[in-house]
Image (cartoon, rainbow, N blue to C red; front, top):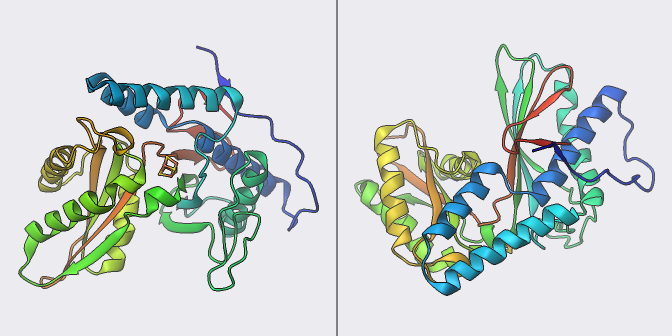
Length: 316
Ligand code: SF4
C-alpha cells in the first residue's frame, strides 16, 4: 500500500502571534500536521482492537454500531475531516531529550502548533477560559494546551504524545484517596463504581486508565498517562498486569457494549500505571478514552526528521 498523506494545510490567515526561527517553524508545522492527523485517523492499535471487538459481537445492534463506527472512520480519512465533532482539548506528553536542540522553544512551539492545527483541521473551538468564561478561539489559553514534561538524559530527540481529550470521555475522570486499611479491594470497587455510573457517558468501548500510588495528584497523572499506552499492552508489574485483565473482564460484564447500547465488551482494555506509595496512603484515579481514542505518538529527531509510531504508512 502506498504512503497516505494528510491534508495540505491552508495558508494561515492573519499575522503570526510570534516570530519563530526557521527550524522552530518546521517543528511547529510538524506537530500541527500531526495533530491534524490525530483528529482524522485513529492510531493503529485502537483501529485494530475495534475491528477485533466488532468481530466478536453477535448482537445485530452492536454489529451495526461497529460498522457505522468503521464507516465514520473511513469517511473522516477520505474526506480529511475530524472523525468526531468533539475534537477535544489538546493534551501533550513531551519526552524531551536533554540534548534536543530546540528544548527552550518547545513550550512555545507546542502552543503555536495547537493554534495552527485548530485552523488547518479544523478543530472545534473548545477552549474556554475558566472564570472569565470566554472562548479563546484558538484552542490555546491559560496553561492550555496542558503539557506533561519529562526529560530524557543522553537523548537528542523529542517524543510526543498528542491526545485530543473529548468532553464525554473526560467526564468519568475521578480520583479518591482511600483510608488506610481499605486496600486494593477498595481501589477495584472505586474503579467499578465509576464505570457503572459514568462509563456510559464516554462512548464505549472504552480504554480505561487507572493510576494507583501515593497522593491523588500522582494517581490522576498516572491514570491519564496510562491512556497513552497502546491498547493491549500490559504493565511491567505482574500483579498490576493481572489486575488489568481482571478489571477488563469485570467491566466487560457490565455489558455496556458499543455506544452503551449493549454488547459483550464494554472496554478496549484497562491500563494501570503505579508508583511507590506512603504505607498509609493508597490513592486511585480513573481516566477514560472513548472508542474514538485520538491519541498519537511521534518521534522528532534533532535534524527535525520524524517517525510516526502510532500511524504506520502515513506521511505528514
Ligand atoms: S466521548 Fe469520544 S466519540 Fe463520544 S462524543 Fe466525546 S470525543 Fe466523540
